[in-house]
Amino acid sequence: MSRQPRSAPSPSGGEISDPLHDLAALPARVRAMRTKILEAVESGDIENLRAPIEWNETPPIFGRASDRNSTRARSFSEAIEALKARSFDGEGRETLRLLAAIFEQPYAKVTRGPVITYVWPAFAVKQAPDPSPELRLAMYRCARFANLTLRNDIGLPIIERVGIGADGTWHYFYSG
Image (cartoon, rainbow, N blue to C red; front, side, top):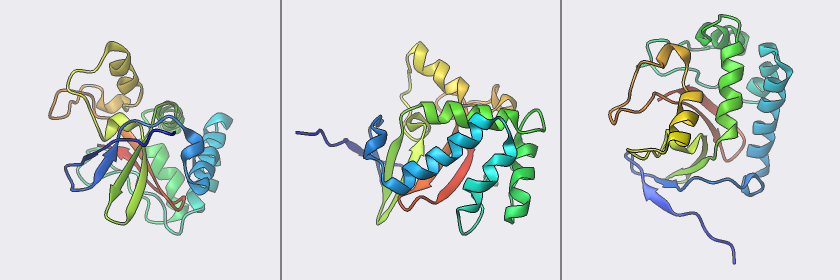
């Protein structure tokens, strides 16, 4: 019998699963988007992220209004420049490194009413107040260089996260 992931209420009223590792359990379109992003990451060329970005009807959100380093792409033509601008090196290498580190981690299934989003890394949406040294190191790998000195309300690093909808839409990549 397969074990169903436990869920806990999220602060925004939805449900957040325990960390999940089984990529085969993801909907096919979510797996396809993750694979396309990782292929671009592995190429080492930020321009190759254009293909997964353009799979969407609108560009993903690359920063929250509250993020002091937020850069929003208002069109597909601005998306790569927005990612370069968010990258500490200005060329997108930090962005590629972050995406690689994020997708190495377990994910969480976040359900808010009828909307399901798969979020990497799981610890970005469900943090333990006292993580193990290994988990704390993984958290720092998923933090932007510009944010390394910042902490959230429980004293942990500000983590980058990626959200992909159940339909395979890449919704966001930002700090939170």
